Image 1 (cartoon, rainbow, N blue to C red):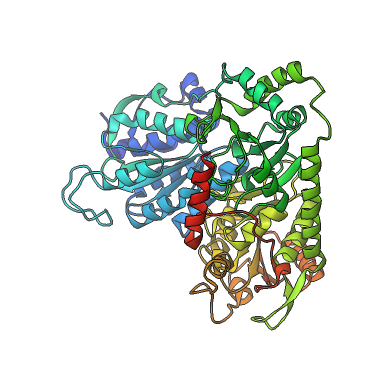
Image 2 (cartoon, rainbow, N blue to C red):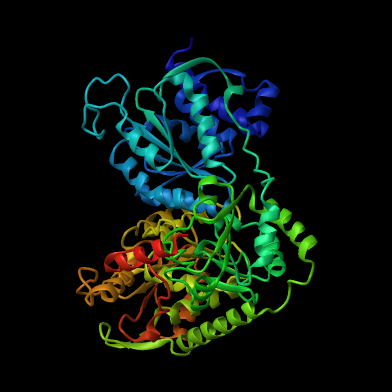
Length: 628
């Protein structure tokens, strides 16, 4: 068997052969790459991910990942992969998540052992909550237990980090080198799951990465993907009967409904129902369609929450029923039955009195629509009393929004001037983004809540908002994904001052890697979502604001290549700043002071319920009274 030094000298020839022949399988077929290879675990990890079309890496190298980093260096020189080195593992995780969100292909995050891995684990809450596939390649303690490794969990216990990562998603520790193909297969099944993709944690003990495997059969590197689930075979006639007998039908669409827009619109027409969607599903039914009532839940629209409160039948499509989406399970007080279409059995059976149709949403709705059309024909279509009531509420919601758009500035006591409100700034920027056809992303907090109430997408994919984890700093970090995409959209990241200061590394890494986008920083000198919650619950805000403003323009302007601009205090000034940012070839930051205060025109309002703080007793009592 070859020595480690001999094997590592062969890496360049392996990479060149794969690049020259357009892939691993072609290189093997041509004889340029041996089908039985003497190589290291670290190279097999890169080869295995390459066979799964994972070519993009984000991360921070450390002593727990230098061996893998050396393989990536050689394969990057051959043009097969690209590592985007960053300054924070949370940022790497967010960028990889956004890459999958936009491109549909998974990327990998690399960390060292210990603190870096823990930071990436924290960031993995976003792909876990939003169904995005991300590989996490993490350095881990050695397997011979010669004593504590620096940065491992200081406890006399095996596999502590494996236990933690296994809680967040699926995980595998490469304790045995020849288990590499099993580890790669389990990762493939996780990150490319057709319905519930998520994070996969491959823990790489430091002494295992350079281990040599003799005559490894490259055929053992998995590449096949899971097929979509067919529609359920039973229950359709029951569903048709419930739809026929119900007068006020609500279709609630989550992220699992993306890709079935045409079928959902037809279902709405056949059932004479109305649609409310979750924030991640904006555009699945075009907002201006008369049957679309926007978002619903604890931060839902006036009309969306009206429909949830009054509906007698719920058709749930691809939704996990997150607390803010269904008002902590109190969102449907008059629903008698639920038809739940979901590829996950657990999510499909979440509510009581449920008919679960488990399978692919598009195929399942197609079958349901066929039977509805045969049973009901056109007699159930048209403008019903239910639709008329909902349209009246949508008209009231449009008037509600119109008043805020007509008063886009208010005098703010902290800034001591007439400045933009959050609805005013967000609406102005969204209209600008629509004209430019840019991708808009929302960071967690008040900016996000106001944003998904204002967004009026006509199709999915224009807006990305992490409402599953509500992770502060996600949107600005996500701009880095634009550097890795072949044909990137312009990224416009809406962020508050609280979220931005959680992950400002994009000002360095975005320029370093050629990312292009704009951070629209809406600054009310506080974490306004929490200040507002405190005031609504207890009458006073506490420990959620700064005493002095931060000079964000000087801060951002100190980074070479970053264009730092003032967004001014009016819609016209903001548009001028956005135009300048759009012309800049790299990262731009626009600072916009925004209003915070008691004037109702300064925000979009709250129309739902939430099981937090001193609302808990009332919300939980209502939930158990409803019993759904």
